[in-house]
Image (cartoon, rainbow, N blue to C red; front, side, top):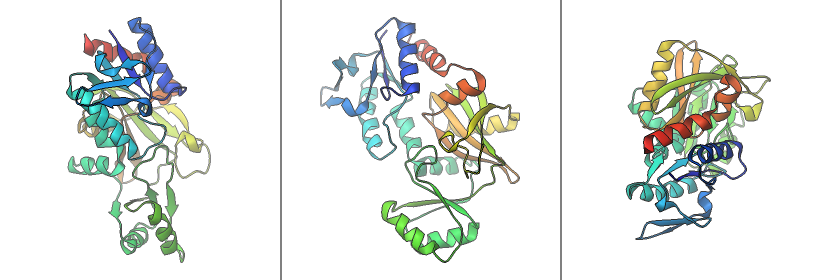
Length: 290
């Protein structure tokens, strides 16, 4: 059995997954970066590092690129062709396409009646300013980002319009969300093949507005109520991902889902729960390919 891993060479989670797959299958480690792939049409052959991906039994996508951007959509389309030609891919490129863009993920969650913080999507400066005034404080989120990169908070102030105008030069479509009191932590609820694995919390350790590890947040174990797990299960079921982490905030107004992720969770599982996600995911893929 030959299974390739799409990820980032030298990145901890990608290397862990590729090594776990190699150890369990007896193959050489096969970790590839999509930026190095050549897709040949109409043959459907995909060459990278001397390997034809179309000859593999399966592919696991850990990371699709170093930075979130629309370029990643094109890379997923390349893999979608391989999937369409019969290569089993975890998770399906189509499923990842639906969560990679924050707006696409949000619309799917809204159509699934999943509770989210009040959110405004607009290209109009006046509407954006009105949203900030209505919310009292808002977080502006790029459509392609992770770990709160590129996000910032804005309250009504005399310079708010100027700030928004400058932001809109880089991000034409503005995704503006009411700031939610996280009570110093939010949850990552993990599923594998649609089945609940466990939950960890991301906890603030400083005055940062978010809980991400990039801002100093730390992982901790937590066991949420059954109804919260079921809410997260419903959210992830909309996307049919093989491995996913659902970001949940517990607030005085009730639970809110921020997003469903196709890539995160490995470090949180290890640090908070001592769960080897790479080994677990490799076992899952191997079993599915038998």
